[in-house]
Image 1 (cartoon, helix red, strand yellow):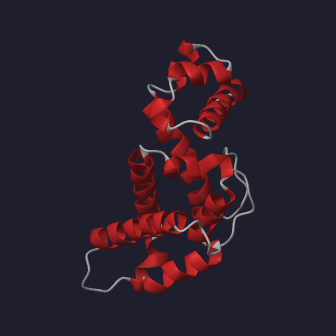
Image 2: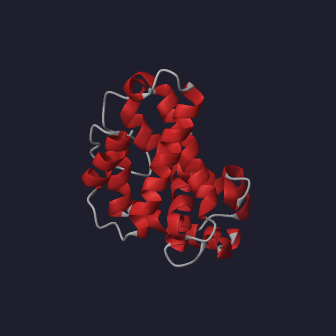
Length: 183
């Protein structure tokens, strides 16, 4: 993707995120997104087939950023999300949530958050699969790998939901410690 396309994509992401901070996902229209991003309808559709695809790509950018840290030796990324990544991918994601980077909490709080959470779980499972050696040491020998990965991914998503529902009173480090203690 060239720089112009990247800037257009980022403008669309930022407009979408801005709208998410004031409106529920299901009430946002493509027209509102393109008006705020100052792009044409055809340009929007060149990048994203639908609003749901926009959400999917926004989630992929977040998870790509977070999960790249687990696979890359460097902690610098060219994504919508920027930070100095900690060692733990779980802690990294929790810190983004605590900081509400790009209004992530709006995605989790909106009535249609099932779509976001499904992407979240899917990407978490892919990370666990790609980093199997890191997490496999805790897997009981008689448990199938696909069951283990599904269990860990689901547990992390539910942990995040529990943390947010409790007004995020614990630090990301505490939540990460809780999560890893029960694995």
